[in-house]
Image 1 (tube, helix red, strand yellow):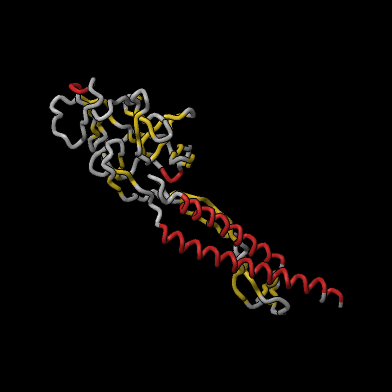
Image 2 (cartoon, rainbow, N blue to C red):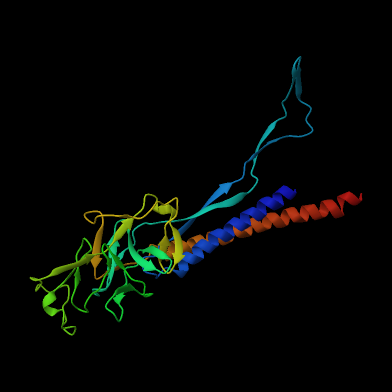
Length: 282
């Protein structure tokens, strides 16, 4: 009987973990580049049940065998195994802002933090007061040759991540040069956005603010070439891959599963109360 209480309690705990993941997905549905989380569960070993108090034993000269009727298997509970990230591509939203870049396909942009290099799918960038390309938190965006310095309104980003500028207008910060203009005859390469990928991106660990950190299981970051499968889209942002309708349906299902486990626990608790207070007194 107590086993049933533990089984119901373990089910309630798992539903709580699942609800945490769904709530986190819902909270970040509008975060650029966010990737939704899933939970994976692991069941405890099942027990084989046979009918008790049935004297069906066959004896042999070297031993015996119990032939009590087989009733089935009894589950003993479940536990949370892991929380993993779904890296499915989010949709691209056009912003017409040259500082916004989206990455189609696998891979991550690199930013430099005080704790070291981190990785993100959030391509909402800007310039700081020194002309350094940074993300919204002020962290420098890394190129293949280091930090990237630009002039306002005097750059464009190609599909392979290469950043160009026009030296003719380098000293004229007020000139409005957009990526749609065709007067780039004298353009020069500034740098190329550093895009990396991992052997096992599933094992990357979220750090917050749309950042990931590599682990021993994900492997080290490896710079990748951009081409057909991976492209940089200037003037676009990648939205989160969270479907709010699906998450709301999951939330309802989890609430019902939690209530079912709760009722099971209460039923076993009531039976234990009757056994102790009524049956044992007789």
